Image (cartoon, rainbow over all chains, first blue to last red; front, top):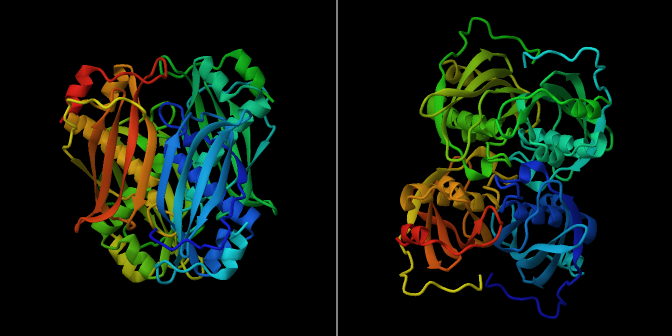
Length: 146
Length: 146
Length: 146
Length: 146
């Protein structure tokens, strides 16, 4: 992500939340949510929030010939989720680049909002035709700049 | 499951429903829900309904030293679920045995209630200590006989 | 699968084998392989055997505009696989239909070849363009009739 | 991991390798390996290498009352793996702490050894009884110090 930050554009700082529930197939042999599943939770929350909060669903991206590719992912685990737990995935766009976004997240357990994990991801916009990264078009920047 | 049917016990025919949403990590390379994930949806619905509808959560079973092992599973696929779809998992106990239950299910897509798939599973009650199947105690039969 | 059996065509009875190893992310909270993962093992074995034994890889099917859709799946669980176990997935085409195949499988644990589970699946050939089932072309029947 | 580095102990720099194959259920809707699956590959490689290279299998850890908990995970994605690809997971212990290890990894595609991704993880040794982190006993340090 040695890409140019979009200055002048105020970083979108609105954090959105998605409520989810642990599925039994998410558990590992220690009866905790398997470590890699948290990344799936963040992905599910982003898809939900793209449609519900930003107004461009992943389907709309795909129809427009775009996909988002994950460039980096990092996570710090703080406490575990287990069988039947409900939780909130909060994500926000921390930085805009010409060709991608830097998204941060935290997962909070219910009902006491204790922090389960936190982390971040760089996503690049790619053309599904060329499989190469693309400059984010203005109509997407506008919808995301909230 | 060459086990004795519990005659005199009216089969529990109440069907319970759990509402769920497709997660992006459930999709396969054809952008449909991956075939084996429907079994996970049924499992998640059973866990939800055990707690919410029968009044014995899986955690309560485990604390009492019991687990449910899957003996058979069969499914007929009718139409696919895809990205962002919401659906209902309806399950009911079709037959009671001394040592297990025969559960049927169907998954219906929202909002039009079209049938996505249907099938069934035999589950045996096992002792977590001995890993052997056990006769279902009366207190469980009573809660399940609805 | 109310489809016409291809009489005159001797059913392909050669059973092929794929060796696999349990991955830690396949385990459930009882430290056994999660029930739905066995279907994934069978799928992986079929893909391997399509390429290695029948001489038509799934990639070749996709390039030719075809996919295989799962119509039914049934499985009987006999014993569990656990952490680090190695096993063999044996599959064979039991019946040919004009538009599909009926595949049987069994999974055997190593090194003693004890049966872990057995079952079967109906697959239909579909056109990826129309998403509808198609008559299996002769060139595929020939490769599969082994 | 504000834990004390084990000075005097030369960091274990031997990198071990595990060969693996992409399973069809690892693929996402873009026909690439799903982003979170790479973490599962690294876990599977560590389990394999613990048993085969360090001489203490995960089962041995569990029998001794220990587990390894993931504290952090970070990954940089470079190129994608797809259907049927084979690859190598190379991992090594970069640093030893009193209560944990810092492991680095890279995944290389076959046959040309192109780098697919790279990253690292902090693991803490925990007592399965107390669920709390523990000082790594000498007999484990010795086996790991290779």
